[in-house]
Length: 188
Image 1 (cartoon, rainbow, N blue to C red):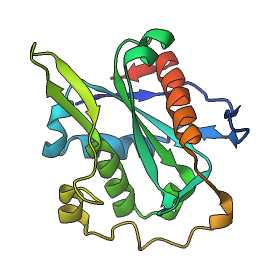
Image 2 (tube, rainbow, N blue to C red; image 1 turned 45 degrees about the horizontal axis):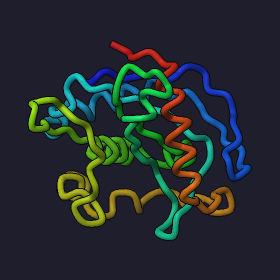
Image 3 (cartoon, one colour; image 1 turned 90 degrees about the horizontal axis):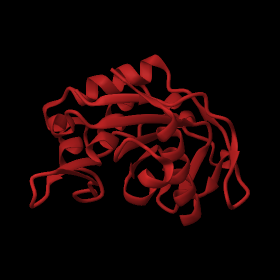
Image 4 (cartoon, rainbow, N blue to C red; image 1 turned 90 degrees about the vertical axis):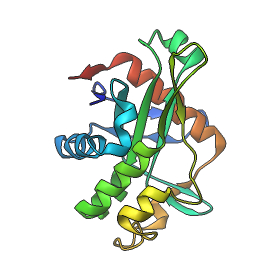
């Protein structure tokens, strides 16, 4: 089972584009769902890897629609700068989406985000981490397990709560997630 991390209490912060971002602690229910997801055979490659879960209180919108969640990889220079213990994955979930989803959709969301977490062995036999891109617009295994439209049958979320995302937002989120991960302690 991968080591799950819970970040320390997270203070609101302002991104470099001036947007205030609120963060919440993941609930025990969220962590429990993620543990169940990571027990699926398709995630056995993540054994021994650290995965942190962060919760954003806002919505994030991209041209394709509202972002339910996303996965980041903390590695290379960010690990060194932040004095983290090594590369790890950070899954970010948007709380308004989580709250609107039923249990099956929550499981599918975390399964989808965990499927982005990938490992491979380099030529020296060392395990390396990477973010796995979608097979198509969605992962084959997620479509097979939950259907192609698993996220569509949710209550309508108010788009006026969502702010359009920018590339800078993505960079800010990754840096903030890395800072929180470097300060956190992995859970057994």
